[in-house]
Amino acid sequence: MSLLLGLGLVVGLSAAGPTAVAAAASRGRASGRTPPASVAPVSVVVNALTADPTDPVDTGIQVTPGQTYNIGASGSTDYCDSPGLSCPSGPAGKTNPYGFGCGSPPDQCPIPSALLGTLVGQIGSGPYFVVGGYDALTAGPSDSGELYLLYNDVPGYYGDNSGSYEALISSGPVVRVPATQAFTSTGITLTKGEVFSVDATGTPSYRPGSTAGPKGVAFKKGTCAAAQSAHHFTAPGLRCWSLIGRIGTTGVIFYVGPSFHLQAPVAGALYFGFNDSIYSDNSGAFVAAINPALSNGSFEQPVLPAGTWSTECGTAIPAWVIGGGCVDLNTGGAATGNQWIDLNDSESSPPGSMTQALPLSAGTYSLHFAFSGNSTGACGGQGIKTMTLLVDGRQIGTYSFDTSGGQSNWIQEHPDFTVSSRKQPTTIEFLSTTQENCAGPAIDSVLLVDLG
Image (cartoon, rainbow, N blue to C red; front, side, top):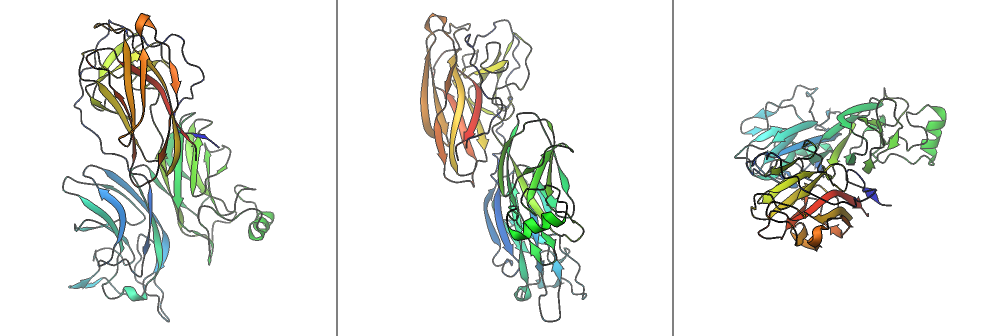
């Protein structure tokens, strides 16, 4: 089943295509600063027995200065799992019940001031830092290298540990969903039609000795059916002890599970929850990364006054990076909404490009967009307008539009492409190949379809 991953489905293309309005004020040129690329969600397991300073867990993420990495963790461990002893801990660590500390030099925990059992991070060979259950790490100018995670314990004493933590790392929002309550606010408010995807991990306990991952337990299985028959679950009929969601405080509850895509049917605050009936005997949490899909695909931000246009550069158009020269943001005659892009700017700069980086999962996608050519312009806009579409630097297609005679209708294109790895963001770039002309190829209504 296809899932839309963009904003604003094209329901009809304008018969009257793009036109530029001559009497308009330019916004001027932006700095051209390129923001850090987004990081696709990465899930790793940190084993309390083995994740010591000599063998930390390599997340596979190369830290970039200026980038923010949201790290959420869940799970349970024991850092003195020996006969007659027990020291249970979560990612935030826990005070030792027997008075043991973090050792003394030279045999000390990676972070002596932190509690035993704390989830700890390290960038390259740099200093250790506390992650705990959640950390928003913004890399400084000198922070560069692989991101590692490890367990805070005294060297030489990892051998009596048990259990593990599951950590989820993303540049997008990461939310902990405690199993001790029905719903938790994600802090995100959706607009109608907005699209998002979710990756989740964690194994909270729904009663002492019994755990479940985000997938939960199938309703038809005996344990789940019996539990729902005997007790009133938050979401009857959905999988027991699974990750669930809803939009608004009274919205329809839906199953989320370990991986999920949704185009919001209504506007409202997004909540995630744990599907259970009795919460008082629960412990632990799910961790969910909320992944942005392709944003501002109809170029309705920033909003221009009707009948105007503006030359934009750098990062002036939200969610997009403008390369080459600059581009013109135009109003009127759009395929969807009110605004569209001319990839050549009115000042006859080098041909421009529009790029967006997306944290896509491995799979096959179809990129839908409306294509045309700007047939007007102070330099004379008629002629053949050409453009190349690139995905991760690979040419996916070339496009041309003949505006001779003033023709400027929109054509819908929908090339497919495949993503083979999810550790690096996928870049989508629309690149003008129309030289020495202030009126170039035009794009609008860009959206992504997940083909599975």
